Length: 313
Image (cartoon, rainbow, N blue to C red; front, side, top):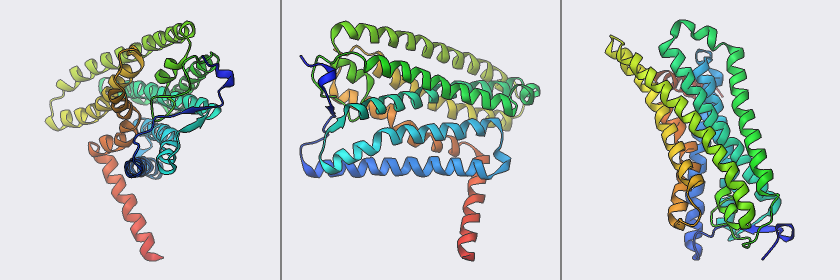
């Protein structure tokens, strides 16, 4: 039995005992991190620089890239340093900060994806009201609501998790301070309190999911009535990109956060955690840009401008 008040550091998951495999893990994480920085950075730069992309859809996409950059930067630098320097420890305060930031950014990400479904619904089903319902002020308010929801949710979970004693040691079976793994270390009586908060969170997440599904049912019904095949293809292109991102994030997150802690395989937990924490921030910009002609054209213009400026220098 150990009390959290006497714990000053926690031990994270060690990927391998062999030094060569630890270095391989470092290079793998570094590649993923650089890819996420490059792709999200390009999306942010292109949207900010091209005034043709200053529309609600791209404003929300810019916020999504900012959230993705923040979430992957919360966990990967520490995981890389652990692999490179062969260390497992993280301070108790650092673990709390990591939990807060990751939950904050992940929840805001999910909230923003819900708002983006509403944006697509208005654009396709009520195009004449698009400028009225999604003006610049409304977009800023909705984005602020997404960030604010993430902050409140993360604050409640972090305060609740780190205010209870830990009765099962200080070893976290994950490569970052993940909430379900921390709950395994909590005392049995306090786990029920946190589980109750997770159930409430699941209900809210399910409400958002139902909203997204209903929005897309209406969207697909409207798209199928478009007489032009080119118009249907363009509408489906933007919608399917969004659905792919939402499906990956929701399915993996639900598995991790609602799975009974006793029925878990460490390898499966690791794979699913990588899928929801590392894959979406890295692939989101690619998923959106590959299916978006306007974004690809704007990217070419920015790249051409950079090459021209480099030649002038």
